[in-house]
Length: 106
DNA sequence: ATTTGCTCAGCTC
DNA sequence: GAGCTGAGCAAAT
Image (cartoon, rainbow, N blue to C red):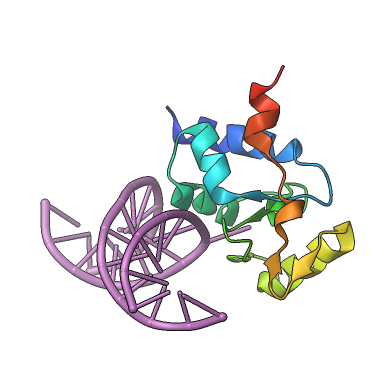
């Protein structure tokens, strides 16, 4: 599979995440069939920051891993603004969006 | 809650 | 081709 295509697919899947919800790098990785680290790459390389809701992707433990513009501080701000609930520096479990289930359920 | 070890694409030399 | 670096993860402590 072409790397550029995988990137496109990743960005399209991001559009499906509702505001106020988040997804883990791992889940995206499993859906697309790549390693979680590659998802991180795609986010870091994103061409249209903000337009692509890359701030809705967090670690599997709910911790923010990074953000190109303004670092995790700004990322957390954005998520709070969207209504995502935090427990310390981690996103609460109940705010995780089960993207895999959405794609498999009819 | 923290630390440790493993992994893997991408970049550098 | 070898070695280092991270927008990761999971297991052990």
